[in-house]
Image (cartoon, rainbow, N blue to C red; front, side, top):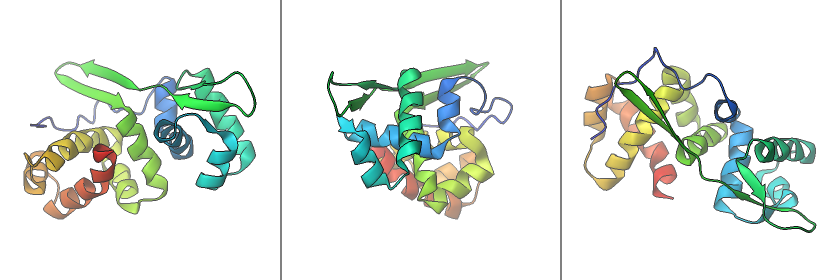
Length: 171
C-alpha cells in the first residue's frame, strides 16, 4: 500500500534532463504520444496533437538528444520510438520513481484541469505519490478515503485525482 507521505523537502522538480521534461507539459505530451504510437513521424505528431511544426521539431530534437526517444528508421520521413523512463530517487527513507506514467500525467495537465490543479497544490512529488495510489485504486486495494486520510487531503480531492489518473495507470 502506498503509505508514504509527500516529502516537500525533496521535490521532484529540480535538476537534469528528466526534470526538464517533467516541467514542460507540451514536451511531455510529445514523448507520451511517441510512447503510445511507436514509429510515428513528426507530421503525425503535428496533426494529432495540433502543435506547431517548429515546436514539434524542436522538442523531438531535445527528446532525441536527451535519449528519451530514438529514430527508428534510416530513411525519410524519420520515425521515432520512445525509450522507457524508470528512475528511482532515494533520500533518507523517501523513495520516488520517475516513470513514463509520471511523464504522461504531466502531459495530461494541458488537457485535464483536475491534474493541473493537483500539481499546482501538491507539486510533482504529490503527483508521484498520487500515481502510486492510483495503481492500488485501480486494483481495488485502496479507496479514495484511504488516500485522503494518509495524505491529509479531502476525500473529494483524492477521488478526483484518482479518477483523473485512472487512464494513465490503466494504459
